[in-house]
Length: 151
Image 1 (cartoon, rainbow, N blue to C red):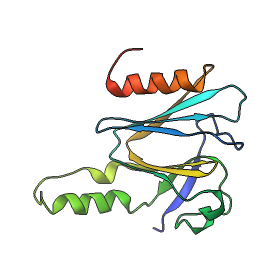
Image 2: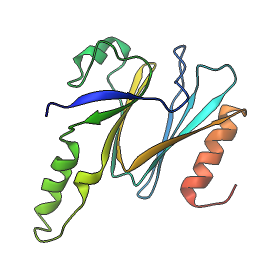
Image 3: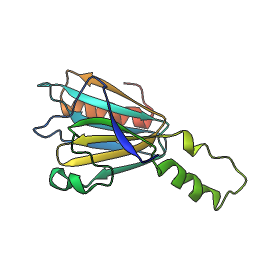
Image 4: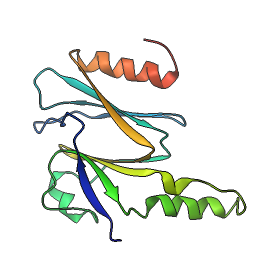
């Protein structure tokens, strides 16, 4: 099956005027904080069970050069069906651990198309919370969550 990105409706879209994405990732968690298309609303996407993340390029002008690009892409969340990314990680893991089942194939490939940035995450699932707080407050909340602190 040829990989293709399918739109996900998570109830929020990154701002087309510039979402100012902030990615927080460590060995246990991955969160993306961004401005939404709703005025004065900031969102935090949490990628549960994440294994790997790509952030940045291509920007808007170069998005059509992405191997999964679809001319119908708009700012928002997508899931890549038939992605080779989980199998690639499984093959890499089998080099040092040939007998260990890895479970990489169960992971899902998510795309977040933002103004001037593309975020790709390999994870079990994604969820989004929207806040009526400042970007800085939501970013600090996300950082505390990544550090394992209660907020």
